[in-house]
Length: 113
Length: 492
Image (cartoon, rainbow over all chains, first blue to last red):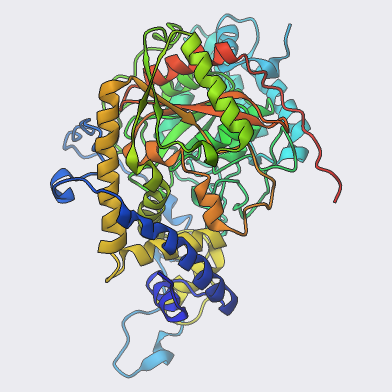
């Protein structure tokens, strides 16, 4: 099936991507071609019964996964070591643009403090 | 005496343990080789000259102090740059992780270090492991050491290139749909994708969680097996890893293939193979038969659906896994201003390369309302059918042999503009990924341009031992000479 420009824009919004106009055009063409190819899946047999019963992935090879660890407290990595990688930090917290705004305060309120 | 850079991991460890040579001497020899060839092939994103040398010195001190230095004593290992090594930058070949430093080491890394291995550097890759040519890295273009105008394969292209070029005897890669096996094939070395669950993924950056697996690349089957023996095993930090013995190295690896039932697939279309690959594959089957294996044809009808199935499932999982890269907790953040949603979209759009965006888009589409049943769920059901077909096949045979790739390494730039053509080259590697089987790629000769070709051996889940045993017998019979020539492309 062919994807149109609106469809590509809808997917980009879901995927939290901003595409440039040239990228949108390229993806309309390329994703359409790929989806056309993928459509051949319809021609193949699928497994009998419901997949929900067999829970195909991830552990369908017949092996038991690692047994649960003993339920004892253990050290975790120090918070500072993780926060070292964050783009903006304040007093041990991640800094992001304001997400809760007074009603009708609008875009102005969401600007960085 | 051969040069140190030509020694395998097994030989290095044996000599270091015996005190014939120091780990530092080995490291310096490998480092010199890397520095000599790196300007041509660009396999590394970061060479760890100082850190690696310190680790080698520590191995020597342990040995001098009477400690057992381990089965990989003093073996220099290269690591694909989507595997965490504490204190080292981890880029995944992506702009979005620029500046990120791994706060902990992957379990596979800890196990290698405990076995006496030392780390020589972090290798280039297709961004997040997404690609079959290593051309999708934000930072470097890795070239095939056999011919510098050709791709090394992907996504573990840097790992494969440095092993082939004699930089290190052993490297780690990750294989989601063929990313260890295909670059190993293109570079004329051995690549092993273990069974799903065999190796802990703790510290491996996730691409498609239902198929991702860390694997080994080496110049011999024995070295790939030795690396696996060290990194395999259950881990409480990865709930999908399996507590099940992989067996001591070398186990039954030298026992040959006499009496083994070897399956060929009816669905491998000879017309799809490039002519030299077809002849090479037929020759490989003749060799195996000559070694005493019994060939049988089996059928996996869904093989023809593998690429479609894989690219729906892997991209769906990737679209979820890569949602975490949003400019908030790590990596690059887009210029400040605007809403949180704008910060997410701005950071992701600037940070991700085009192939990653394309796959996130495809996966988001396959999971979206109205399309989920027709794409993601359909692919999941075909995958389940494929699993049944492989299980039935393995009632009749002990191993399956197919080409690793339809042809040898292609030219840089040849397929980058056509994503579907690039995906189709994964036709023979994706089935083992979808079903979780162990699969080994072993060099099988060269095409008429002198580029390596390879045979892939698959076996039942957790039966790496059979893939290795077949691979070892085949390797001996082929007698492949693994010395790349660094051929320059014709001047443009």
